[in-house]
Amino acid sequence: MTMTMSVESLGAAEPIMSSEEMYRLGLEASTGGELRELDLVTAHKWFNLAAMQGSLEARAYRAELANEMSPEEIAEAQRQAREYLTTHRAALHA
Image 1 (cartoon, rainbow, N blue to C red):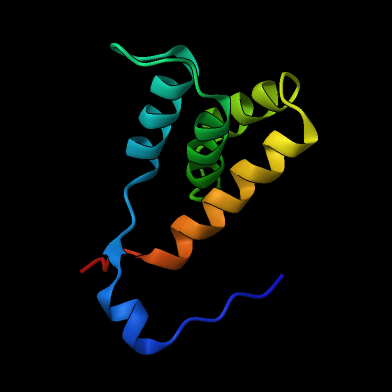
Image 2: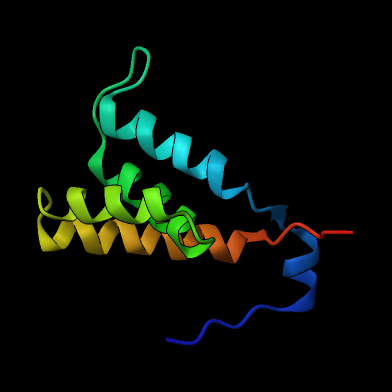
């Protein structure tokens, strides 16, 4: 799959979080976090994004979650991850 973005939309996009931040969000969603309900779709999304940035722990958790999710839930998590990527940009490293 190919994604295209205009220069204007990329410039207006928010920076992408670090893989560690995404991993922590995945953990919170997969365990219910403080005062939250368990959300496997959101957890899979964050683990997927963290794994894309090289997090081996996130990759392992994503695989475990996928065993507990329906194909429709996995597809929704992947859609949400793609949406995140289209509205956020990679942080510039100096």
